[in-house]
Amino acid sequence: MSGKKLDVALLVFLTVLVGCQPVTPILVQPMPTQTVCATATPSSTPEPTVTSTATLSAIPTVTVSPTATPTAIATATATATATPKVISEDDFSRGVVILEIPKIQVKSALEIAKESQGKLDFSSLRENPVFVETRQLGENGVALIMGHRQWGVKAKVFARLDHLKEGDVMIVRTENVEMVFEVEESLVILPSTVWSELERLDALFVQREVPAVVLFTCTPYGTNWRRLLVVAKLKS
Image (cartoon, rainbow, N blue to C red; front, side):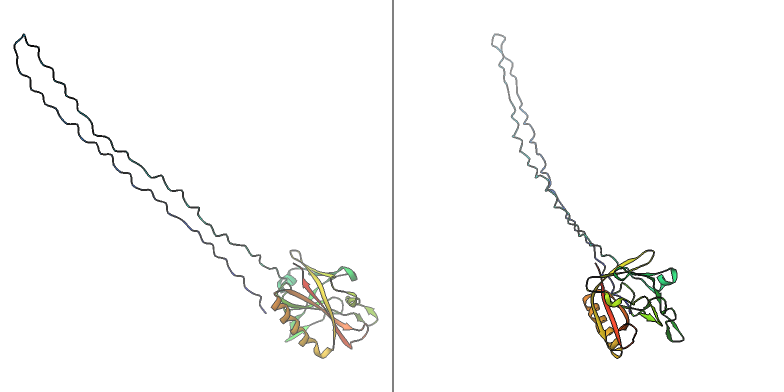
């Protein structure tokens, strides 16, 4: 089953063009030319003096519109969405995956159930819990981890699984990833209803868009009469 793809946010920039009004040219009228004719007079008569003053036309005042203040450029900021981390089959092949349940003092290697001749291989289940890849750990929906409570007369990894209550935590970690799950509920069901109940829980957590894990074992201790499911969601 595959997880949901992330939408890619689009980044948009807005620009505003700013213009100025053209400057009106200054027009200067030419100065008029004054012509004076002199007439010879007897020496006893003073020579008349003619003065001509040319007046410049008034220079028009030129008003230049100030440059408009640029409008702020709006920048669309894309919100980064973190890519969810998952623990895949490749992580199991590269190194040890650890399951820790502090309340019941569990710290164990977590194996993966691999296919062998068309069937799941649970050969490591006697000693360690086994991850069944219904979904990747960290993917929305339910990932399944199975473990024994007892084998022969010896207590096994999930011997005290029934002690877990709402709010208790379990941790799955690799060299690069650590996931903390918080218990929501525990269910005791008939063996014949296991897969229908897992499908119901998976659909519920897919709808909630929340990764979850179910720890699965037999109950009561020392019997296989019923099945115990401890349901835990990934803490954000």
